[in-house]
Structure formats: C-alpha cells, structure tokens
Length: 46
Image (tube, rainbow, N blue to C red; front, side, top):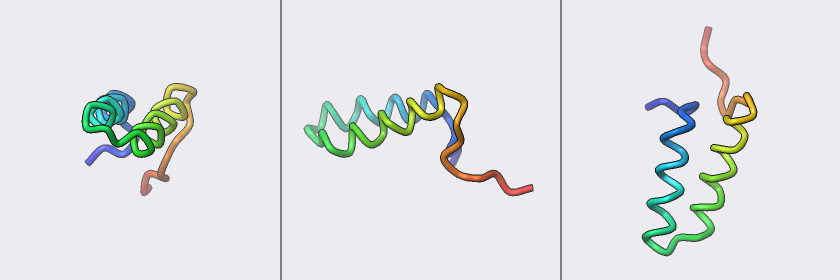
C-alpha cells in the first residue's frame, strides 16, 4: 500500500531470505537501498 516505504521493503527482503527466495530478497533489498538514498520507486500521483 505504501510503495515508497523503506522499512516495508527491508522487512520484505528479510522474509524472502527466511523463505529461501534469494532472488526476490535481493530485488526487495535493492528497492530499499534506492529509497535509502532518496530515490523513488514509483511516481506519486499529484
């Protein structure tokens, strides 16, 4: 529901790791990293 939530992407990455889904975990970790640097994953509607 909040595509730009850094903590949500971090938690999702950790859950993927626990489930053995390493590729998905890396993708989620990458999105979290982008957000931590101030980037946006999706454009917010005006």
